[in-house]
Length: 267
Image 1: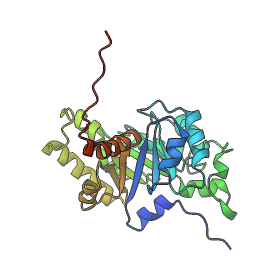
Image 2: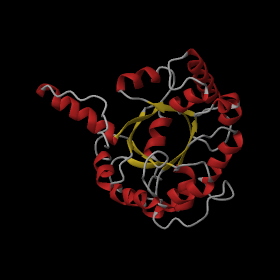
Image 3: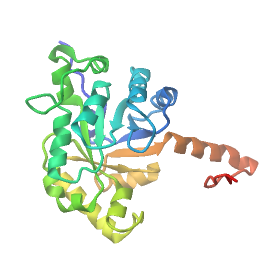
């Protein structure tokens, strides 16, 4: 009998190993396919803060089938219908923004699993071919392998974090550190003690309820520091950010060190 397929990202996390995502913001399957071969564990396809549409996501899934990195999607809002459509397009995980109540956490978990465990509708035409389902069949395999990542990025979520973290079916508590800072009145200052205290509360709740922990990490050095706190899942830089960093390294010997892009005058 063949060994049942297991989501490699979930498997690494279960083994206590870090996973790193490349953030995809460019609406181009070629970019995503190339990123999927570079050593990242998964692609964080950004549908909340980019022009990527459902049709483009579907093309990205098709372009990356069989490539090393899995494809996950951050949906624009925590709703069952948004998760349903990206799951049926074939993603292996869903990130739900602004999941600030236990009810929203439960909704996210239910959106990613078929009845009786959840409320996902049965129509996985493309998703059936995303991974080998084996004897269990796609529906049971999907319930076991699709990853549910909820994003904690509001002060009100921190106040109820123990209830949120206790939600069955949630795999990862991901801290949206920038939005959290704004919700705390810090306007992007992520080093403020107030934010650090909020993050500590989230970490404690996640560990208490057996959830994996995630957050953005701009550099590997930063990610290693976060691992000491218990984080294992990291959102790496965007495709455009990686291109910019490589361009700066290349151009530096020519004395052309780029800075923050400045828009041209429109008059």
